Length: 102
Image 1 (tube, rainbow, N blue to C red):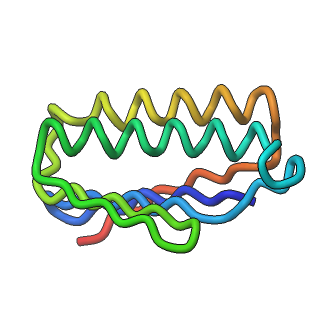
Image 2 (cartoon, rainbow, N blue to C red):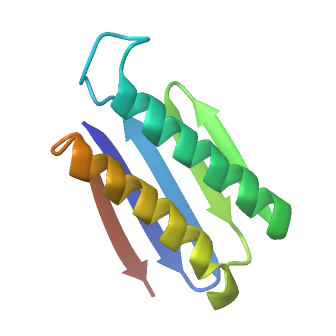
């Protein structure tokens, strides 16, 4: 199972993507490939438009957007749409969670 957790705290947004879909053997897993591609594209886009750091360690990608604003919401919306499309075709392999912290 792949878990995508979006945490918002003031102007900071953290995307934490981890896990494995286990849809198919390693190297042939289209769900993992789709989520990985969407995740890396999201990280690259944030890095182009705002103060962002990304860390990829042991199959876990953490994207920290240090200066997230409402003008960046479209990036999350497009990422969510990509994940929703993957879930529509391959249900049960990806979990999307969001949390707001004070």
